[in-house]
Image (cartoon, rainbow, N blue to C red):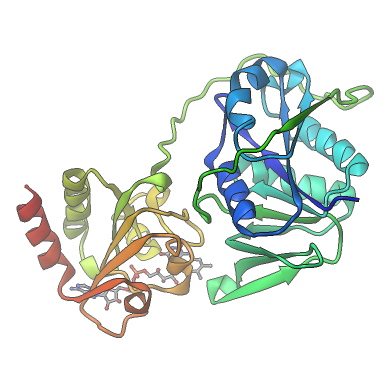
Length: 322
Ligand SMILES: Cc1cc2nc3c(=O)[nH]c(=O)nc-3n(C[C@H](O)[C@H](O)[C@H](O)COP(=O)(O)OP(=O)(O)OC[C@H]3O[C@@H](n4cnc5c(N)ncnc54)[C@H](O)[C@@H]3O)c2cc1C
C-alpha cells in the first residue's frame, strides 16, 4: 500500500486558500516519498472554475466530493462528507488549514472518527515511519510542544502563514469524483442567501510589514507605524501589547493569538519578542528590530538589531522616505 498524506483544500472565490498552498509546499519540501493527495468539497461549477489551479499544485490525486449543496459552507454536511471519505480512504496523515472554517470542521471530523487532533500547528515533520510530528505553542506560548498522535490518520490543523509557498513540482494529477451520501437526516439547514459583509484583506502575505509594540509608549507614536507603512507600501502590524493598549485593532495583531506572517522584511519597533510574538514571525525572510534594550529577546531573532529609540528611528525613516 502506498503511504499518503491528504490535504483538505479550502476554496474561496474558486481559488484554493493560501494556507492550502502553504501546506502542500511544505510537504514537497519534506523530502518524503509519500503520495500527496488533496480533497476538496465543492459544487461542480466551482470545481470547473478552480480546476486549472487545483491541477497545478503538485498533487498526486485530487478527490472532488461534489454536490450542488456544497456551494455554501455548512459544518455538518461538510464534516459528514469528510468523515465518510476518510473511513474509506486511509491516509497516514491528514492536514487542514486552521482557518475559521477549518477550526469548525476539524474537531467535528476528529471526534466523529474518534481520532486525535493537533490544532493550530506552526511546524510539522514527517518521520521515516510516516508519522506526523506536529509542533505548536503550549503553556500559554511559553514552550513549543511537538506532538505525536497515537491514532491514524495523524490529524493536524496548520496556522495560515506558518509556511512559505514555493514552486510546485509539475505532477500529473489524477482526479477522482465522489458523490457523497446525503440521504437521511444529514441536511438540517437550507441556506437561502449568503452575503459577504466583511471583506478581509489578506495582509499576512505582505512583502513588508511595519510592526509596533509597547516601546512606542503612546497611541500618537503608534500612528507613525501607519505613516511609515504607507510610505513603504507595507502593511502595519502590532504586538498584543500594543493591541491591548487600544493603539491598534486586533485584526493586525501578529503572534500566537494573532496572525502568522511571512514577509520579505519584518520591521519591529519597540517589541520585546516574547515567544508568543516570535512564533508568528519566524517565517520572515529578514527581521529588523529596533529596541533600546540590546538584550531584548527579539534581538536574538533579528537579522539586524538596532539599539535605538523606536520613535526617533521611525521619524527619521519617515522623513527619508518622504
Ligand atoms: C496565551 C498568550 C498568547 C499571546 N499571544 C500573543 C500574540 O499573538 N502576539 C503578541 O505580540 N503577544 C502575545 N502575547 C503576549 C506576549 O507574551 C507579550 O506580552 C507581548 O508580545 C508584549 O508586547 P510588546 O513586545 O509590545 O511589549 P513589551 O514586552 O512590554 O516590550 C516592549 C519593548 O519595547 C522596548 N522599548 C522600550 N522603550 C523603547 C524605546 N523608546 N524604543 C525602542 N524600544 C523600546 C523594551 O525594551 C521592550 O523590549 C500572548 C500572551 C499569552 C499569555
